[in-house]
Image 1 (tube, rainbow, N blue to C red):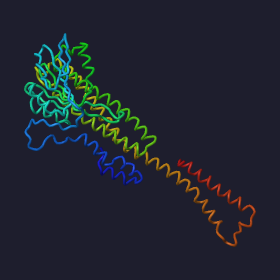
Image 2 (image 1 turned 60 degrees about the vertical axis):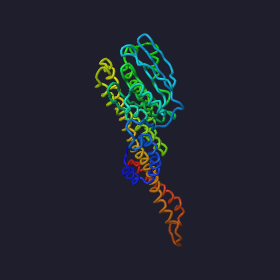
Image 3 (image 1 turned 90 degrees about the horizontal axis):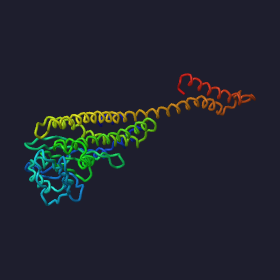
Image 4 (image 1 turned 90 degrees about the vertical axis):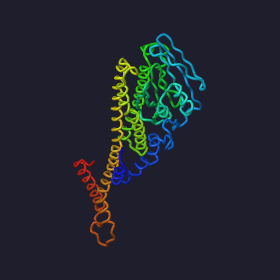
Length: 388
């Protein structure tokens, strides 16, 4: 993003453009994106580590817990009463239990799940503390993974960034979402149908499939933002306006939100690849390498979009400046043509008693012809010099 000094410098060159640019870069626009990127305080200073405090907005009226138990030849889906325990974890190799929790405002539910499943208190604290950077933390008998789920809202103009936390251990995976609705429906369909390898693999492979679904969803968001970037680039070139600059700045904000979620994916997957058995099998790491390649593609695409949108501001100023120069050139040519004509008209408009030309019958048409020849001569000179 350009600094304030660059904005002031650009405004000093084109005073007429400053109003348009200032309208697009109003401080309130900066506050909107900062509110989505800057973490709020998780808890009061001095609070004991592991204290569960929800820091995000309440996106669902009541939390919901669903459980899917599956093996190579069976699958059971059920919704759990919030007051009842989740149930026993399958023995490693005999099946997998996937618990999905929608809604993070019920800190009592999160604490109870953490105690029942034996999760580290710091992991449950981070589940409720939304706005975490994508990461992987390795505990003694389970992994804690934070990934962001990206979707478009408001007609495809705004990126919705939702934290998804995964706690993975032998024979189980617990996922936490802020609100209902996700990108995991294809994974659930594969589990129900028994297609592919997912029902014959462990919880580490399930974690891979969920992360892969989240990464793939980022490509759809990038595609939509890429199309919007092309539209704005054409608009900046052909018909730039203050609204165009505001749209460019809004797009830059969304790409900034996207970049914050995509960049740490590379380190997260690298950490996943370094986890040793039994938490992550070598056979799963082969698939993780594919997701690792996809994360690099995402980062490259995000950086390209970021560079393009950063250059759009300079392109906008150049386009508006060129249009202004064209207008000034036309006005200058018109003024240059009429200056000698005004001089001649001013001479013969003086009230002298004796002007010899006034007594000649051809004086009036002669002066008009002279003025016409002067105008045409100047047009010819401008044409030869390439000014018109």
